[in-house]
Amino acid sequence: METIAKTGGAAVAATGAHAYDDSTIVAERRRSRINRQFGVWALRIGALAVFIFSWAFVTGQGIMDPTLVSTPGDVGLSFVKQLADSTFWTDVAATFSGAMAGLVSGAILGILAGVIFVRVEVLHVAARPFLTLMNSLPRPALAPIFILWFGLGFGPKALVAFSVVFFVLMTSTMGALQALDHDIKQLTQSLGMSKAQRFFKIELPSALPSIVGGLRLGAVYSVLGAVVSEMVGAYTGLGQRLVVVTNNFQVSETFAILLAMGLLSMVLDLSISGLQKLVTKWTR
Image (cartoon, rainbow, N blue to C red):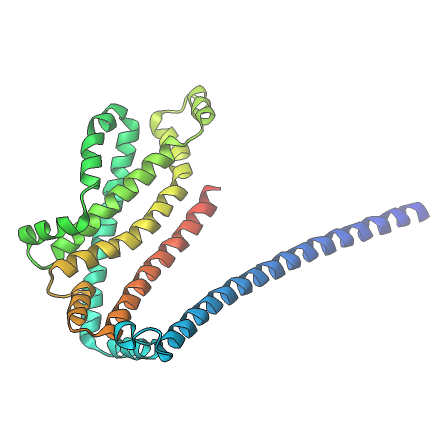
């Protein structure tokens, strides 16, 4: 009985020590993650503070002319005034709608084209020169053509955004599908999986993280494409607003609008970044 009691006590002690070790590891990981996040935000805030201080210093000391580069205070005040202007939000909605239309349509068709070209290699080889030619066309040169065809409204900015996103998603999809391990392909064939089963159960889940990564890049480019089209010609939009204030030498307003464009791209990127994390967890 005494031996059994000792053995049981030892087992309980070992179990407690194991639980303690697990809790300690979890706590250390949480602490490490918190410290890492703190370090990241400290670097971000520090870099931003150094940039703003340097900007204010060179303009305040007359090293650079404030009429050409403005000042951080004037830019911040102009940004706040823009936020209080109802027409500013009309321009934001116009740019965002064109960018989103180009992003969604370009992503869907780009992914489909990438899948088709990987599955039918002869089709990709035949179409490659034409794809290279179309992708090499400068987007600012396409904007006047689209405006000539569809006017100054919604269509041109969506088409310019589409022309950028399509090739980004097509390239990322093809690269992800072609990078699939050859041994995995051989294994699926030996297991007797059909092409459809192999695609939906093996190839697509493996390629999704890279495809969503391409979507993040496409989101930023979609805003760029919409703005470029608006700068060429549009009734509304941040691009058209930027042209007006720049032509009037309103430097602080120009930087305020550029800041708004950057924040718009950041919102899209953060949204798709969350989607990328979910996809990565699902495909593991």
